[in-house]
Length: 596
Image 1 (cartoon, rainbow, N blue to C red):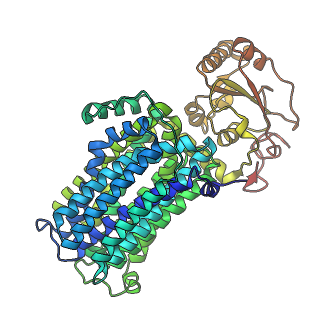
Image 2: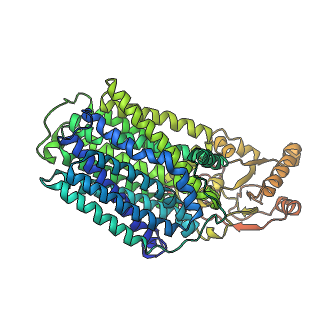
Image 3: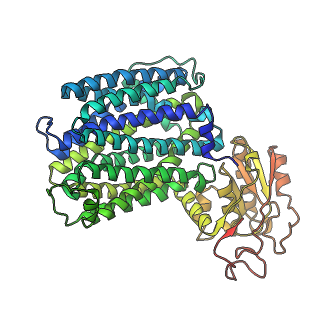
């Protein structure tokens, strides 16, 4: 069976992957070299304190995202994305040429100008980077493709930061770094010419060059779908959190941890490797489907490890000379723990961000998907600018760098709880995913035959009380379950069923009104193009054999003729949630984890 790495053998993905990897790599070679130059060497910007230089540089880089994302989104929808990528890569070559001159002449104005222009380059590339994937990948490849892109970006940050920091630390490293960024830009341009043409998503689109009105329109596209809008807010918060953590690593390392430029590289490496591992694990953990249950899991990790960085650095002496070696750096009490924290931040970043990007791509209208991504980038930029301003304000008011990170981690917990309250689907999926991941390993067979859209009814045998949860984890498209009203009201599982908009049903002799309401709700769901799942036996088997079907399925399709998709559950008979050997839950599980 193919996995996400098989995409690297295809022309529809590999040239794009190489192009975006080299672009992110070059960004970080330049940015890391410039930030370390300003942090550790005798170059000043208006005599700003060391701890403020990285946040200000980060703010300059992300400002174009806020200003020009609306235009970039239109261009990505109105032009062939492969052609647009080649033009953007040509612009990168020009920008790196300007940076080369700035480095050779030690001209800070040219270097800051190049940083701003590099932000424009990334702004133009951003909507293409994520909107091209749904055009070139199948739905079951979307999570894997996003995972590879996020992993590639993390590795690009890693290797770019290593190279940028290493070169700038050499005696004559400025000249070597200058030449390197131009060569990498040329390599990215060459790779872009191998990307296949994608066609135009919105051929009739007329570009509105007014950034204000188009920004409002882009945000309007996002708000059309509440789940997409709140997912974009979640992504934007991730970048708020990420820019605070990443931009403060150099100053944290020098001022608090007592490390050199190479210790900065070590921490960046640790976090980037963690992000790559977390991203790649997403496909395996989600079963090749968009599993938003991973998002709360990621949010928990981001908060926990962010807080622990503050706890690990309490009592650190500040202003000490940098450790002479990485071994000496790690021997300083608390520093190894901080490194583990950054690794944890990376892993849980992957769990958090990959499903969110895949969800936005999957649920956005193809005709304006790039503009949705552009609106996402606008909000991302706004959050990142606010993050930079907050960091500067807190540091100026006397808060320590670890204190800034702790405040950000606490805010992350508050924002995550707020978003999950607005969209309980995230929390519901998290609870289902956690429960099923702990107790069951679900093997899926032919689930790709379930329609991706349009009204249909799934019918399945009923073996245990956990059948609906198992189907929910196995099916990419969320179904509306029809279930017994007593199970629906179970105090432990009721939140999950209500959030999944399950439809409770009762026999006529028990509650005739509820029975009629259930059929009305089923008809309304099917008329709205939704997928409904029913257990036609009307009860859980107590023999292990399929029981006679009730007339419910017949009544449903007579009222609303739609396709009926049969499914079968195997392996649940004998589980402690089945009725084998007596009432369900009356016996201990035979083992802690089962394959189903």
